[in-house]
Length: 208
Ligand code: PRP
Image (cartoon, rainbow, N blue to C red; front, side):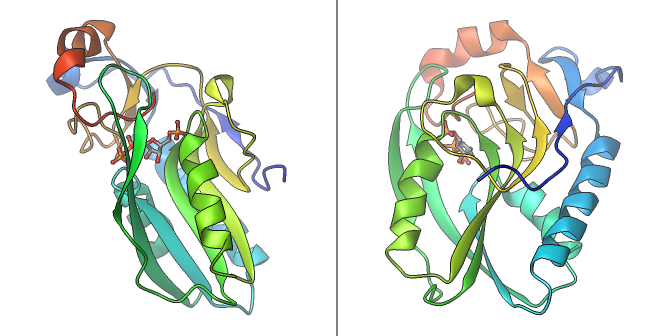
């Protein structure tokens, strides 16, 4: 399915805050751009789900900031659940997927909105979606804040996309490198020396 959003290409000229300049090369998406886009995604989702209750299922951990902002703008009845899934690997590529938390709520017959922070190779969603389908929801739509189509290896087309981004190592607003930088209020491009130096020690890495 093609994206329902009027997706935006990321880009900003805002300087990196001094506190993060050593680690972050540039601000790709500002706090303000994120806030505006998340609100408009929420409006779009509201229109599509009018009169229905949705079951929002978020993929841990990177999605937490996006999720919190998105659902507080959704004027719809909704229930919320989480799936824990992580790609474990060393280096900067996605490794094997490990499920760390299963769903609690019943999915059968529900309108599911699957929310993730970034769609990269598509390996995560291509594993999670069939797992959801088995549970017989009424319908599943997918919503990602960031889409990096240049790295796709699985055929996945999200329904809602916040920003389409280039192939850069992005951190912030939930996205990490080695579990760090999730708290940045903006999305930035990590300086290569950071992930080159720490790559071997990385542990949990997203597929950026
Ligand atoms: C990241 C991100 C997505 C996935 C996208 O998760 O949150 O779920 O990678 O990559 P893919 O399209 O190549 O599968 P990660 O495993 O890094 O865990 P995290 O959410 O805890 O950061």
